Length: 424
Image 1 (cartoon, one colour):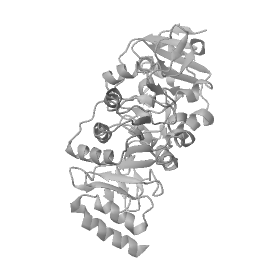
Image 2 (tube, helix red, strand yellow; image 1 turned 120 degrees about the vertical axis):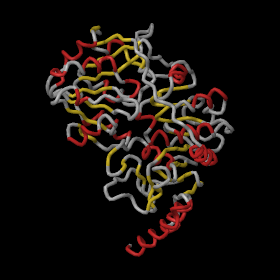
Image 3 (cartoon, helix red, strand yellow; image 1 turned 90 degrees about the vertical axis):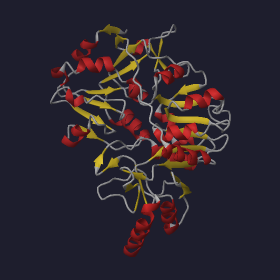
Image 4 (cartoon, one colour; image 1 turned 90 degrees about the horizontal axis):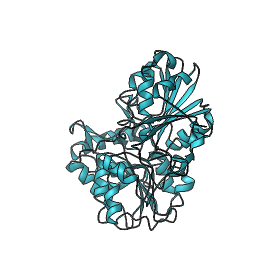
């Protein structure tokens, strides 16, 4: 039977040596985390595990107590120091592998998440964020739910019986939002090139940020698009409402857009909580190739920080520092390759640092790990155009990438490529 307690009482249930899972994104239990931050001694020698996302989840669990540890799969501005000091274990895993790790490889003593209130049927919806929580619910020795009466209960979200909750904390807090990116002319140019690669009836996966927003805006002339994506962004809402994104052409979840978690504005959160043609599913559904390959014409659209002339992709390190995580881009790139008619698109600005640095580089930097292999790459898009790299021979793929680099860097890239070829 569920026991209702106050947020500041949760810490009493934590013991040294425990591993505690914390819900991510919009399932982050902010009321409870605020209380834990004031209960330092009770967090000593406790390890917190969470898929904290940059820009939305800002808690540094190691700030609770000097002996608190954490496991993370993304670096955020709040956690980088902890990763460097060794108090936070950063594990580089793709999304589907993170789910398997949580489900199979780590014991969870306590799972803490945020949910909407129970319905009249006694079921508690997982709300507008379903991605990783199901991995731990059946294995956690104790389940703690922060019941937020301001979180929507979408009709297409899975639920659990109220009896599955051991401890519950009532709260009323605005949902975490993700700021809308500023879309400039460069992002709009890139978005236009991306949209040119999308055909009527395609099913897309897309992330968040200026380029994804611009690409979504540029799809307003397409018809019967589908959605099967880990993230639900603001740009999806007008496409569904205008009838551009009907999901009618999908053989799987026909007529229903599928997403894992909502990341956007208050308007998007409200809309996602009541839209019938939207279903929320965990990472085992949104990022599993055995599922996604059943969707014909699946198109993944993701961004990157660098692409080198071999076709290797860096999407999570900058200047030798971990600034994000590997995320789910490789999962969906590989799934797109298995889809009948599928394509994957990497979209990025041609330059960085106000035009002084090329994002198309001869090779990835010495201290930069590779996010996606050269065998994963398909289409690459910058503001200077789009090129399909997949299936191109060694030298031709390098030239294709140079063609969409910023013009002022092309000669230098060609010279660097000649030097590389001379060494190989």
